[in-house]
Image 1 (spheres, helix red, strand yellow):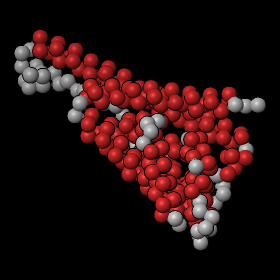
Image 2: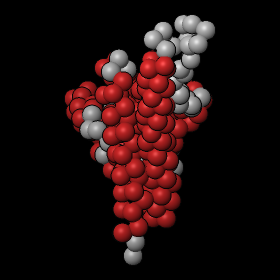
Image 3: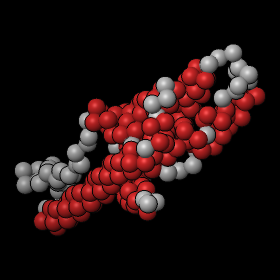
Image 4: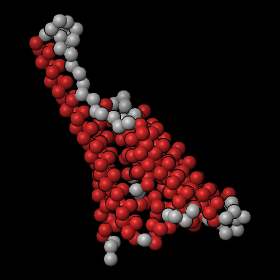
Length: 236
C-alpha cells in the first residue's frame, strides 16, 4: 500500500477520533468509575467488528437499506440515554449519601465531642457508595456504544474506502481490513488516554469528578436524543 496514502489516512482518522462526542463522554464516565480499561476494550471490540464487516462487504447493507440505519440509530440512542441517566443517578446517589453523612457527622459532633466511632457512645458514619457495574458489563456497554453508533458505520462506508489504492497489489478487502485495523489501533490508544487521563486528573478531586460525571451524563442524554431523532427526520 502507498505509505503516503496511509499517513494521510492516519492523520484524518486521528483528528476525527480526537473530536469529543458520545464516545468521550462514556469513556470519561467509565474512567471515573475505575472501569476505563474495560470500557476501552469494549469500544475497540465494537470498532473491530465493524471494520471486519466493512472489509467483508457486510456493513454495506447499512447504506443500501435505510431501515437498518434507523434501527441502529434508535438502539444506539437508547443505549446512550440509559448510560447518561445511570451516570446522573449515580451522581444524585453520591450527593445524597454525602449530605446524609455530613448531617449525621455534625449531629454526632454536637452530641459527643469524641470522634465518631472512637468511644462507647460513638456513632459510625458510613458513606453511601454507588453500585459499580461489573467489568464484563462495562465491556458489553463499551461494545454497544461502538456497534450502535451510526457515525462509525458512516465513517467506514464513506471515508475509509476513499483510501483504497487501485494500484496496490493487495485486494480491496485486504486493504479495507488493514485500514480498519489502523483505525482500531488509533482509537484504542486515544481512548486509553481519555479514560486514564480523566481518572488521573479528577479522582483526587471528588467535587470536580462529580461535576464532570454529571456533565458527561447530560452529554450522553442529549446525544442519545439526537441520534434517535435525526434519522427519523430524514424519513420519506
